[in-house]
Length: 354
Image (cartoon, rainbow, N blue to C red; front, side):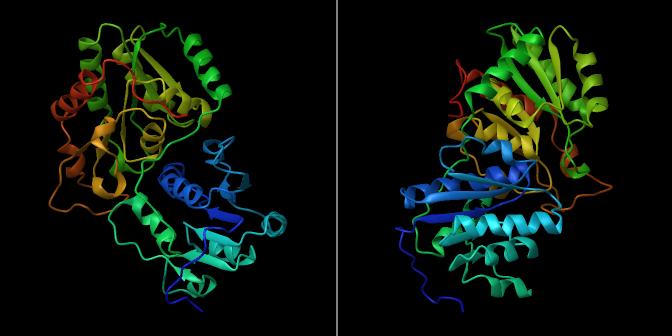
């Protein structure tokens, strides 16, 4: 039965956080992790995450136990997972994903206090407390889970703790690409899973070319996933391999450590947008279908900028569209005005992930 006025002491000894996927969404959960650690400084915290996003939290001092699951666990995997959750024995479990599977895992963990978002399905009954967000911010949405317990939950920006090994690997990889030491690096990530989040590659090329024209020591790092070589390589060729480098299919930890080396990062509404912010790099978000207030809730004071030209039909949250007017309205001139201002306002690289 749901508590009417849930106030849970912050003296609990074990807390489980559940956010299996995706890379960007795990980043958006990090302020909630900070808030739990601040509210319960002596508690052991476990974080349940899928393999794809697990490198984001590997070695993170805020997390005492990282529980990594497969994207599609077998029955044997599920039994092993439940046994591990039982061994951890959380007193409080916060489910930030709230699909049927994670609701069941949260219930089977044995936690006597289980927080999730209300819905019309049977899984609502698996939670003891319901989070009721009153914010348009994705980070604030997750913080509502703490508010449901009566715990303090101050707004925050995602931050990652990068291992020294990942930083060193990034440095070696950049050296192998003949990136000059001390060069001004700006990252450009033209890919995204859905067409409604992909800016025209020709516009990325034009924007990167303007950066290289203005920054004599500039190097454009053009990144993509393992299946995006055909997108990235032509862009690098057009810019010229003397001034641009392709970063395709790099391991996540190395990629994020490379983002931390950039003076700025340009990306659509996809995972690398949020990892760049969490790495401490000033980030230009090319927002199309989604409101920046919800999915780019990052402070301008930290150097972040959202480029958003609202269309009559936006926000729509659609993955497919035959029109894409929201993307077409994001001009190269407008993007360059923001990026150049970001670069001019920072004579040195920005604050980095810890």
